[in-house]
Image (cartoon, rainbow, N blue to C red):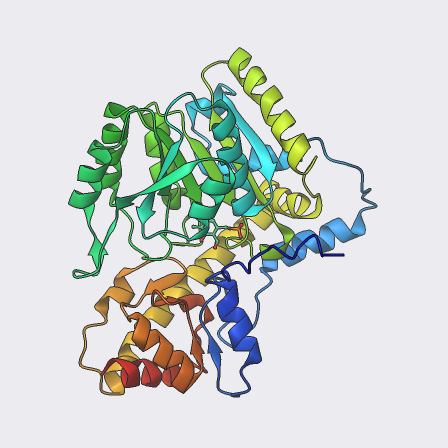
Length: 402
Ligand code: PLP
């Protein structure tokens, strides 16, 4: 009897996870993994944020049960997440017009939002995403039953944003389409619009009547200031956009494997919010019924306990500072080993990654000849560099880019 799966062709490996697999299989003791976006200490170890450790200790002392959460998740977490994203002073928040539900990390929040839109968005079901973007945006759009198209974002010649090209493209997006922005720390380029440019984008999206979807995976982690990092989202809401915001606590609390995030939709009345919420619950119930408890308990403990919240602000500042200093150390080291190329863009970028400008062939050489693992687009996770491996990586980059 033939197998039910005999007709299945092998799928393409994930461009990020496949880098980790290749790294694991490499026997070179000097190998370095710069592919996956997970923060490491200066010694290259995973980092448990002190605020999270304290929250876990506090939770451990309580006799907590393991009951089901409702479809929308843990309400204390939802309130804290919304306050963090929208800001204490937000009118939407004060008037109770945000529908915020717990989600399975940032990915789950985007997926839930896109699935909801594919069912209920009344306009054009095309999601416009930046070129380049986090690769999963394409898959999530397609898997949610929507098409995706690019708008211009990056200028490889200048190694910076192509803001004019971006505006031109947005001016030509059909009305009522969906546009996705990275709220902060654009992945993979590390370049964001300035506050003035965000304001112009907000006006442009309003003129074009576009539905704006923010992917906010790095709030606080990017600059160390959680308020500043949310300013794009807050600007658009202040300007009257009914945005969707997908939040992740993977990076800014180091809770990668706990799958904790949130989705917020802005509504215009309490009655509308109830209707939207009732449909959101139906979408969630059919996908995963209800979200997991532990991550929500940790995040709400951290954000709602004054002392832990203060500690968190210190923790994110520490991570952001270390990444910034690594950028400088890497560029200094590249000079030291004799590279005459201009690497200053590495210092100008923000967030977890650097879009180095290395091409596919150079990346291949780095991996094959030096066991330095990164994605084919030349993106490195700066957060994985530290005292021990910077000289080795700098020399390897210099060797392949001479
Ligand atoms: N969005 C962007 C831009 C990201 O870089 C990431 C993670 O790498 C995510 C979303 C997903 O985050 P999570 O791991 O919480 O699903």
